[in-house]
Image (cartoon, rainbow, N blue to C red; front, side):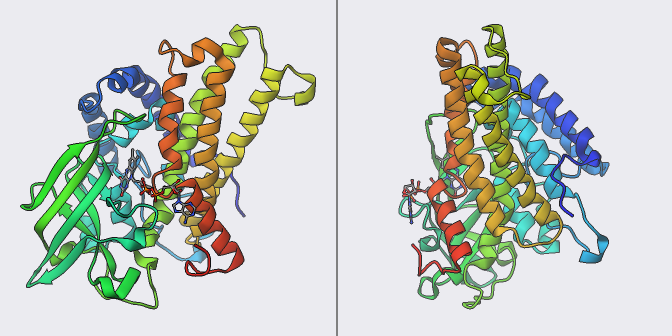
Length: 403
Ligand SMILES: Cc1cc2nc3c(=O)[nH]c(=O)nc-3n(C[C@H](O)[C@H](O)[C@H](O)COP(=O)(O)OP(=O)(O)OC[C@H]3O[C@@H](n4cnc5c(N)ncnc54)[C@H](O)[C@@H]3O)c2cc1C
């Protein structure tokens, strides 16, 4: 039976992630918000700690990386595994800072892609690589089936040509997971992902973007000009199965969307926690045991935000729990991402409003969190795209039926 309380076995991990967020990420939050594109050196020590935990086997799901579906069959009984551990720890880290969490070495969204679709040999080969994820192109964002970047087999190598934009950690990571088509005429089934190591001739980081929020995280444009990668770097199977369509590549999103939802829950939680303190200082006590309508307008608004947060958090837990228990979670991953992405934007902005001038001022972090949260409703599929996917799945429509 599903139980969406934080499992006992993960409470220590949650506590540790919270300590890291409070003592390492928060104190550096404003510094790297102001110093856009500067590398947060403080994260190297943190990465070394996580590597140490991984080697000792004590870090199931520590950090931001996605994880492989749990091995083993249904007869193992209910499992609270690495997917749940990941969303819980990433939520805590993003309570500290979203941009810094996205900049954690070896914890990129590309690592989730590798975990989702790599075979065992590739998983081992790329285990210590920090991987960004490159799907978006100048002419294709939400419509990821329209990818124009090509990969052509030439002997034992694929030759990649194309332009990728808005690659998170693209300037800093060791490798990028690039989505490219093997044959445009075969449509979405021909889209495969390739691991391209930095320094490969023909791969150039062209520029870094200036952004509204998550300024600690670098966002790069990368050009591939006759960039040759070993054919073994194609993740999963090279076969083009037109019946399976886009399913192989899209499996990545079942892993990454709950993670982004967890990031959204983390930054929203940070805003709520600080706002509750500020309200208290201003003489407004939020009473969770009394009906909202008998409390002040500020307290009633706050309770509504808390309820939204709880719904987002539970949907996120559900999506991860389903993955841990080897159940299909595409619908639930989109529901979690849609609810949590929107909730983070709403909650952080309402908290700015509730805190008045303090909310808008740089003396505290509420204004920063309102800027940081917006991306969580955009990348890995926008709000509108998640709602489209949910509608298709509930109504049993294909992407051709409902666009
Ligand atoms: C800071 C940042 C980091 C990013 N990191 C990465 C990364 O690491 N890797 C990567 O590959 N990409 C990344 N992206 C890109 C991101 O995933 C895309 O911006 C996103 O998928 C939307 O694509 P688009 O910008 O082309 O917008 P479009 O697809 O052009 O959409 C524009 C608007 O139209 C809406 N829309 C589009 N189609 C429909 C439809 N059918 N129905 C209703 N509404 C629709 C969208 O919801 C959106 O509001 C990042 C973006 C940002 C800003």
